[in-house]
Length: 272
Image 1 (tube, rainbow, N blue to C red):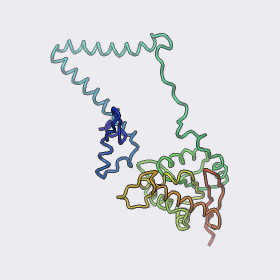
Image 2: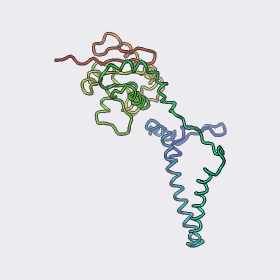
Image 3: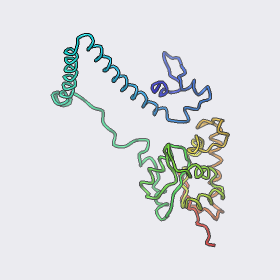
Image 4: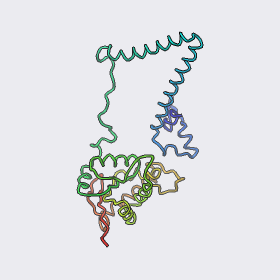
């Protein structure tokens, strides 16, 4: 099962496209692709392989025991142990360089800090105190926000996990309504959000996703894929709203405006 659902929606075999179970299940109305990265389903392959090995060893041991008796079974076990020992010993007995391992990367390219181009963001946040909220809230960029927090040292509203605080969905709903003044007040008064970081070149492509890791402006039963015209239109509209909020707002103060990011300071509520 893990192997089947880890496949992409379509596989190419002998120049022909074949739908996989993932696409068939999606056609039946089950949004499996929206729930998890399909690569994660590959874990099922490893689990299935481990179970298959365990069952094979048990089956072979039972079969050998029936055919050759206990002595034969003991001999088979000794042979197996000898194979394991031999395999381990070859690591030391073979000439240097006979076994070549692939180099281990020192960084994960997708999340390499130098790829974030966020020096201006870090500088803008340096003097602020309080939680930071980053948009978009797609699960990948939630993770990037968490990684960026290791560099700026501020608490973040963003998060990426299957288990989250009870208030998290409400916070993400308010984030989806930004830069609406009511949403700004909600995040400021309930969580104490001090800054909002907008990845302006990402909103147009990653504005949709399963709640609470996405902004569904359509009913939950309607699936709007990432990168679709509807998603791009909604993302463009959100970006235009943030660009309009750069001036004339009493609740937001623009700290950074560059090709990649907009950073706003959330103005504290006036003392009563």
